[in-house]
Image (cartoon, rainbow, N blue to C red):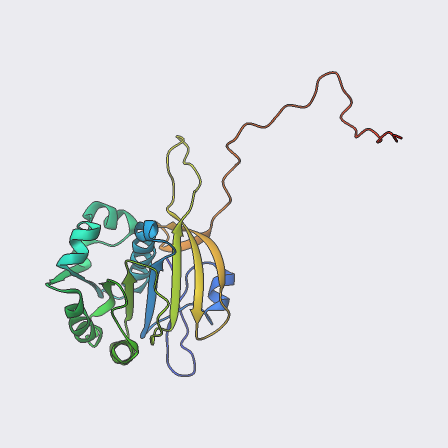
Length: 246
């Protein structure tokens, strides 16, 4: 299980992600009591962004805390309903999840602020459409997260580069992962770009989520699946010198 690292001098707890280089870039792990933004690298990567946000929420559910997931009717119509067995497979128990539906996307930020101030909420995920969540609104959310001690996750449905008060910004794409012993899919794998980081450098990682350990592991590159031409049978494998012409 991912550990909660020691607090920084300012009292900010850190959630270890399980990958040393990534934790070091984040100053010890994902900042607790803070606001983070997760979005797809391209519109087709919405599922990968949701997967990463779910994994972050799982890391934050320590000491019996709950997760709150806020989405608008439009977000549900665009992306489909949350799939309970899939969330449970990622490690997010439905017994520790509260789903809140609001009529319009702009209605999602107020309940997010209220939920973040509640110390029973370890993670609050809010799905946003377009550029919803300006600098002023996200500053309020960051202050609320600091007061409650949980993490706030702005889950974008489209890529967004607008300025906001999030501590980190993540762009996520799906990536090919390793196969299990039966040739089927194994751990969910993400190509992650940390494009904003208030506590250190940015960078790119290829991560797989281990739901048993509640931690990420560095993903191995998949083996080449294309056929490779065989070496010639009746010819030396050593390179031959070039003959001069003319």
